[in-house]
Length: 496
Image 1 (cartoon, one colour):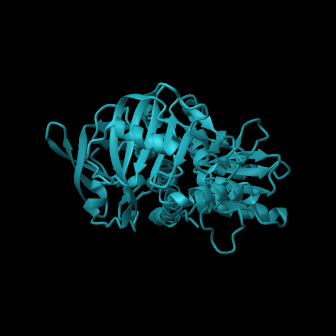
Image 2 (cartoon, rainbow, N blue to C red):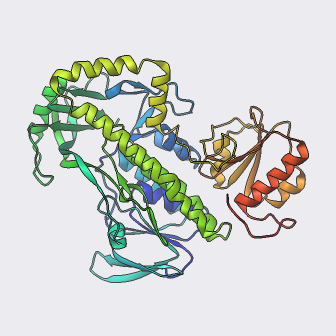
């Protein structure tokens, strides 16, 4: 890469790979630099929630990921029922992070992404037309790569964030959390299995391939992250928290880490953006970290593509901060509260906590609200003043009159205009925007027309009114969001 036209992504984790695949599929030149070499078999994240699965479905790869893991309709440690979620994926998919990475990497490579492994970004500088990034290869050679925009997807110790001089305020929520991937001589009958007794916590999660992830914490044994972990130590904590160590053996990975709660105040500085753990880190409670990271990239990718293709002004990119920073803050607070509720409750209060959770979470409205929040189904973005209530909200996977589902229609990575079956559009509208918008109809649509963004959120919806007024509103919305149609509608595209 040596131009001011493409995007350089630092980091080939789930967030970086999702962004790269989206951009390449939209025809944007994209290079990824990754410090690691080869595929990793080690992982911290293992939960893929419903909203992320929907985004994968909108890319045609959800079914492939489903084959790699186990579907659990209940979030065990709080007994949150996910089975009633209004989605095709009413569960949490338990699968190692490397399966998600492998799938996203394959997609990115298929669409022509250049992934440079064994290369580390060491610094950057930007000007009015692009960004120069210094990259050091494994053999010590240094080269400068230039791109129109740079995205830091390089984790909690982000070099991109450091190069921008941005702070990463927050705190360590829990120290000396132990992780292990093990075999079990006597696996639990109903995994995943979770337990806490005040000073000890453990969870055992199956990967579905004979390996199990164990997380364990001992309040009374706070050690630095670089202190070696012994499997006997994990067995001891698991025995206290769960009443059984299940015959743990053959550990292929042991690690100790601390759980941080941190968020960068700015996700954008000029032509440089932060996504995923480079922008925010959360406790592992609820399994929302990987999902939030992937959805950061889903939000940013279509905006970068629109700007680079000349379909939108640079100001559209500011909405990434406006929309995703509040989501990161919410996830940080929610996962932190869950973690403290599970890990730091005094032993004498554990029974009360468990009873309270079981009782309250059986109240249907409370149960549904908790499930929607953790799954990401209820994420919504602020709408302009006076906009219909639907604007900014997740679009459901509507059945279409042509036999497809809406999320299948979104696989073009374009905006999709959904109209009611009894409200066809004038032919000149569909012709003018045929290259930028997918046009479909849905028999169960309650509005006459809804414009859906490439990230499956609603950009615009009709108000009730005279049919001629509705047609004018559709033209205006398409111009605002998708640029001037051709050949009848010329002008500078603007975005609301």
